[in-house]
Image 1 (cartoon, chains in turn orange, blue):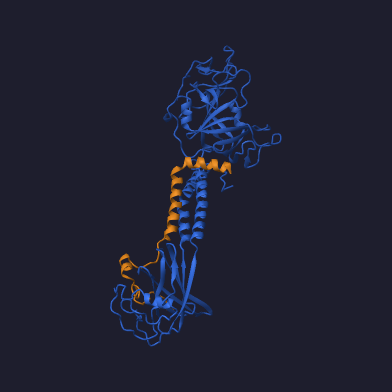
Image 2 (tube, rainbow over the protein chains, first blue to last red; image 1 turned 60 degrees about the vertical axis):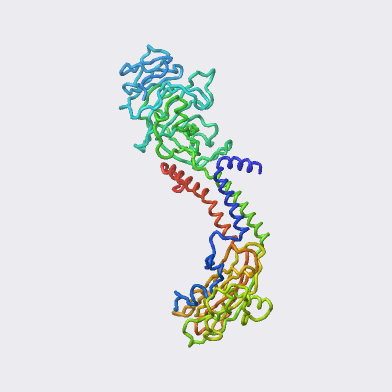
Length: 71
Length: 497
């Protein structure tokens, strides 16, 4: 264990930039988790203005479905 | 490069062919000489200048570029103050193109008593890559005159691993200066080299003799230039990758840091999962059948004017009342167009889910399942409504599932489930207003809606882990490319062995 820590100390001195980037990644993960946010975005179709005004009644497709295969 | 010795020699010998005077720095040890002028290789006794020298052989011409280090120069190498006394160009019997240069090193200040155990030292240069060669302190054990047949060996004293790099028989193509052995005898040697950067372990074995082992250490050109006080630009420039050249793209540091960060990431993910536990809410609805005759687009039953968020229905649901006709709520803004008339009762209507409470900011995974769907489609527009603020978040999903028999085989297409994720939701109470549209001709269809909060952490985890692994992976690629370039010069590359 001591040898691992001594290795890590040397590694941090050797690659401070990468160590900083890893720290930034961990901090981002916590921030995203606390905000309930997803890096990949989400499926919300409502714009900010629409959110303020309330949602559509029937969505953006008007009740129609396109592109399915009537095999 | 330099035809003249740098410092005055201790003695001189005369070339038996051209009578040129060849300097001798080690009269007690040197026995064989290469003439700078006529390329004659001869034997002489520097201690007896009047005894005749004898021609041993002759080289055709000086091979360019000649010695890049001046013979006679002194400098610190390998822990000793050494002098360059001999220079030879070597090649391989079975490879006309391979050619490298070796310099014999003698102590600049004679030792008291015997030479150190790692002497003699030599310096070898191949395509700008330098090796300092000395006697090996440890090497593979062999019986009698047997040669080592293994392809790998690990030194028990240092733990360094070595892998077979090359096997060859040398030939001498040129020589200048003085030598304490007949270098032409080396043409009978069989040589094996094992690489373990920054070292190269080599065995030289004469017929019916025990092998002699040498350990070479890779030197940067700047180290060689500094040792002899030369500008580094005067040395041959490096080409390709040296057999013992250390790989500059070390992966250990990046992988170790990445490993620690991955463990921390896992711990943080566990902490988030514990402090923000996932919870689910499931609601099931039955969408009434749509008559076959109704092939026109299905219109939705709108909520009453002034209740675009379906709050009245939500409250009604919360009060265990069926989500029938919601009460208008004048306190909420009326932003929708006037209500359209209902086309046919039962075609479609707004459905309102139970309420889910978010205690922290969260992502919500909405899953739609219509397990009874077969050879039909269903589209669901869902509005997630914050009951405190009135903010809405809308998603639309299409579910279609087709199946049949063709050529005696059952086929299916599509899926009767779909999901959508809404992230970054502030804490509060939410419900879904659902606007299903069902294909004409479909019977009563069950729609199951599942809401799961605090989802999305795994994708964040995976994505951040992936981003953090880019550098070590890139280092690994460069490390591998360097090793591939090294082994291109070997007949014993790991992949071909």
